[in-house]
Image (cartoon, rainbow, N blue to C red):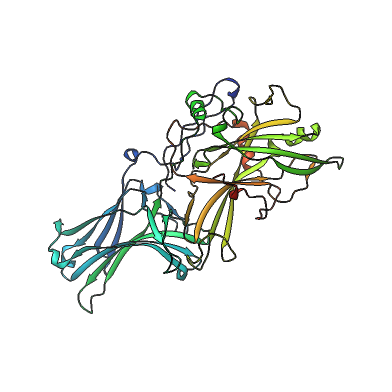
Length: 456
């Protein structure tokens, strides 16, 4: 994926002295266009004697070594951002143009589900680059040049049936992964048409990377202030606007003496529920239990399992169903790093102003990989994300729940929101252990899903 300078992560003062500055890893959040190094990509046509007679050149604002990676082909693709024109030129040797009648160029976007015969074309933009009546093109050093610039639309209108009203969708990012059966791809093709039966047409082209600009709304004023001043985040009690606090989720388990206990937790996620890849997803949890011994076990940071999950939904039948659901649709899941958790030092008091022995407050965050594919939905294909909370896994505690406890839909964007850059609050000492541990639950679909509750 496209990489650029990461968001700023700064240590805060006071009791957050264990906070860290993240290493200078690369991030896919979009940098200002003026700061991107332009790159030139070249593709050649050669004759039977291995002599190059036509060259396709593409100019991108993304360095050639950091464009979208096509995992199936094992190459970096020329990559374009939303609102960035596909610019380039075709160069042809002077003596080769004599027998050319026309040169056409096209950009095509398609969704492939399984095999190439199942491709659905959602974008087709043919253009005439040159025809003979236009006269001789610009020539330099014995080569004719045919410059072009193509602006991709942000949206396309698609119908499931000829009689249906078209629905508008944002065009998706390029997706090509070895482990994902469904891919989205963009192709630029130049068609050189020749005269004469003995002079076959020629084609030259390449796959393209495309990245939509998905920009989350700004966080709350209090969160922005915390980022600006390097101070701790204000919790849900003091910043209701800045958190999405979900209803209590109950769960059961047995402690060491086979005593069955019931606990509950209230999970809060930072608003808005849209986060930029390469940054962090702040969390906080209020954990309740009448059994103080069990509460001590469950509130340990390494007992709580929450992580980001990606879901790819598609059907091989094309856009014949209006919603991403039903037996014709296939789902592929992929889980990412676990959340890091640590005891909250600012939320130990209850709303009444005194410490409640039946409640523990734990802060957390999920580090979002810089190569996450952004959220997308078009016709019969969708990529969505959620934060999943799995059953707790503590020493001397056996969870009675076998499926994930809670799923919260979130959006993954590509560029930072307006305002100060986000900070990471996770203590450095817990990051390594937290991202490597695996939940004691096999992923399944029949768990509590709040997507219908209107939190997005």
